[in-house]
Each structure stands twice: as structure tokens, then as C-alpha cells.
Length: 408
Ligand SMILES: Cc1ncc(COP(=O)(O)O)c(C=O)c1O
Image (tube, rainbow, N blue to C red; front, side):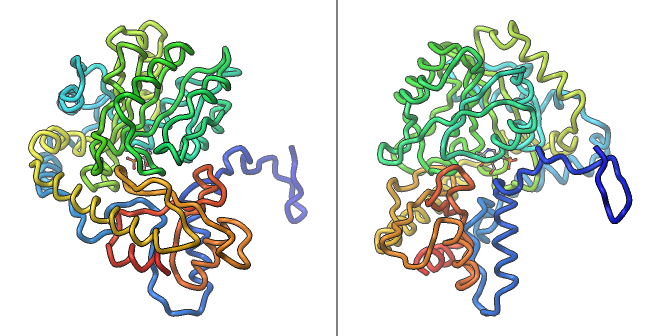
């Protein structure tokens, strides 16, 4: 197709299918930051929009991680390209780390290193895509799944998470929307954006439903073990003898190092269904044509997973619990916001806007733009994660920012 361009004719133009920034967290964040840059109030910027734990100055990774990376980078042994599926020692360490919570042992061959949890999503969706296929995503959810599905022409169908039932999956609606072309469902546990942690019993029901429907479960466990309420974290892989599970993991959140871009895909599948259906071969083929996590980062993984002290995790969970308490108490005092479920995991929560208590606001986006412009507080409009007229608020931030930002 030729386009007029100042009298010149060019045969190329941007791919509109890739223009997903209107629904990405980063796209909305940039838009809200622009409205702050254009304002003339001198208020201090408070960002409760993105979930980057390093926004809280008290969240510092363990020295074990720094030492491991420094030693790997200085050794000259890891200046090479890594093997396609990841360094063997890193695969072994991740398999051991995950196996300690499972009723069976993963082998290193079940693990594939990725550039953060993001690349794990970027790989697994095209691997599952085929003409006419659809995938079930939670609503609210994590927008990377929607953007990636759009890029590989995988149809998306949304099942609801129920705010007043602790954000459990509406399994009836999930079953009702499944057909012969449904290949998988995604579950995020602990949940970003909802802040809940699914119970053992509910996960078992999800596994049984998925088995009945003949679909696999993609369990996004990027926030694995970031559980500070009454429900302990249970990995979906516990139920992998019922249904095959693809686990997505990352060092980003639990180790407070999102910038180090190290994650993984683990196929939890004692019945070898992913082997028989060609999924494992396909993951490897995809890895052969994409970029790898840095070799020295991969080399640091065993030490990070094996040598981090329990106190490091306990301290961080204590801080998250305190943030959740403060957040929930402040919310209760604010008539225009309702938080239906106190956050107990991950690093964010969803709150509903009560429009009867706010004047001159059209919707969640309008709410966030005006808040940014007038008060320099940045929240994420719920529509970005699939729930219009809600807000997602990060609680992994400086506590005074959290208190001030929410009560503004
Ligand atoms: C649910 C979920 N999945 C995946 C990711 C991406 O993980 P990473 O930051 O390791 O790329 C995130 C990041 O925020 C997330 O919240």
C-alpha cells in the first residue's frame, strides 16, 4: 500500500496491530507523567502506578545477589553466549528451588531461562498459538498477555475474578466460554493486580476444571512466595499430575531486582504431556531465535537461589504486610474508594471508585489524569488491567508516599 507523505510515496507504514501502548502499563504511565510535566503545581511526585519494588528505598536486594553477579562478571568465564535453553547450573538450581514446593522433582530439562517473566510470556503465547486458537485470561489481569496474544493472533477470552469472593476465579463463566479451540488459561498467583493469594482448595478446583476442558494452565508465579496474609503460597505445579502446568517465574519481585531481567519457564508435567504434544520442542525452537538472559546473570542464579538467607525474605514480607495494613486502613477512611479485599500477596491492590462521592469525574482514566495534574499522584486506571472504573495501587512503595498518595 502506498501512502502520500509530503508528496513522497512510501510503501511502508507502522503496523497498527502492534500499537498496543494504549493498554500497556508503561504507555499509561508515560501519558500520566506527561500530564504532570505540563502542570504548574510544585507538589512532590508520588508514584503508586508501577509495581517496581525498588521505588521503596528500604527494599534492597540481598548482598548475596550482588556478590554472585560481581563474581560471575569478573571471572571471564561468562563472557560467552549462553546455551539456547540456559546455563546447566542455573537450570539445575531453578529445578531444585521449584521442586522444594512440589510433590515430585523437576529436572533441569524442565527449566528454560528467560529475560524476566516478560520474555517467558512472550515465548509461551506464540508457542501455544495456532490458527483459530483462543486463550482464557483473567479479568483483571496483566496486560502483557493481551498485547502478546494480539501480536500472535491468539484470540483472547476473559474470565472474571470475583472481588467479593477474595478474587477467586468465576469457574462457571470460565467453563461457559471454552470451546474446541481453547488451548490454555492463565492464572496469576499471588495476583497482580488484585493482591490475593489463591487457596490450595481453589487451585485444585481450577486444575480439575482445566483438565475437564482439556486445556493447560499457565501459572504466572512471578510473585511466588510474596504472600504475607493468611493464605500460604501454593504453586500450581502441585496439581500438575491433574493438568499440565507451565510455570512462569522470575527473580524480579522476590529478590527486588526487576532490572536484572532474569526469569524462567518451567514445564511442570510429570505425565510428559507437553513432550507428547510438541510444546517442549516448540519452546526450544522459539528460544533458538530469540535473545537470552545475560550469561553472567545466569551464572549468578545458583548462588542467589541457594545462599539467600531466610531473614531477607522475612524482613521484606514484614514490610509488605505493614504496607498492606496501612493501605487498607487509609482506604477505609476514604468514601470515594472501596478496597473489597485486603492485599495479602504480590505488591498491588485494586480499589473501586465510588462515583457518588466524586464530582466532575467521568471515569477511571479521567480520575487518574486529574489526580496527576492537580496533586502529582500517579495511580493506574483499572481499565489498563481490564476493570473500568477501578484503580490499581502499588503498595511496594515508601510508606509515607503510600499514606499520602492514597489519602490525597
Ligand atoms: C503478573 C506479572 N507477570 C509477569 C511480569 C513480568 O516479570 P519481569 O518483571 O520479571 O519481566 C510481571 C511484572 O510486573 C507481572 O506483574
